[in-house]
Amino acid sequence: MADLGFWTFAAQDPGALALVTPDEQRFTRGELAARGNQLARGLAALGLARLAPEAGDAPASLRAPDDGIPATSRVDAGADARSFAAEPSLGERYECVVPRLEVPHDPRCESGEPYPACRWQLPGAAAAADLYVVWRNTTPEHRWGRPSLVALVLATAREYQARWPGEHLTIGDLDAPGPRHQTHDRGVDVDLYLEHAMLDVNDGGHAYVENYVGRSDDEVRGLRERVMDLARILATCARGRLRIYYNDPEIVTPFVAWFAEQGLESDVGPAMMMHNRLHRFHFHVTVPEDLAPPAPNAETEPGGTE
Ligand SMILES: [Zn+2]
Image (tube, rainbow, N blue to C red; front, side, top):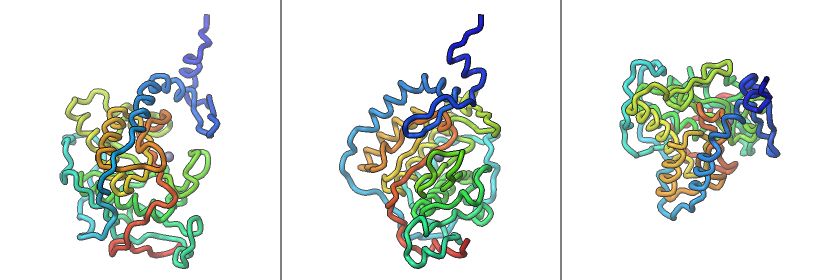
């Protein structure tokens, strides 16, 4: 006799839409099935995230640079044949320098108009001189956002590349309203990927491969160190004002503890929390609308219009 339970439905068509929540999050059958397992861990992470951070000194913030982008040759971002060292090359010092790049922007930025009239566009990967990679599904129209968000992302990419030589941050959609997202429409959301280091690898065509299965403990530790470092870079450069969705409790718990130890506070929700199934292969980062833009410095030169 056929089993008509939900798990069977989920297995038969995991991509079918199963649930739309009151805040318009959409869950497929597969996501909903996976969520059963994640719920307990997610609640634990949320509880931890609500511990009040202690007061303390503000971290290093976006500030003037002392040098340019380190010149590196392009290295294959794939995981094969790499030894995943567990320590970044520069310890816990985060510079948060916005690299010198031509940043396309709306001309209305120059007359002081706010978003959405004034937007910056993340430069394409070629223009960025291998500082980062653009996610394969992210079109040029989906690289626009608030200037402060674009500056944060650029500073983060530079920092990551400097700390993990030969590796790159992959930057996905900024403003991209439409079927792919429920948010990404206010200039405050961005998806970031470490394509070789996060829990899952997205092979495209709705194929997600678990990235940590079959790896040694040392390798997994090295991969998690990269993910943690990315989260710390983002938190430091945003002065704590961010929320990250990512589904690895082995990251969420220690990151939230580190965040509190730094005296950081987020006004847009827990600094990191678990979310639906898709947040195993990327960070969804949200910042407040009034995130302070980086201090003016010689490395950022908005140029061109579009
Ligand atoms: Zn997103």
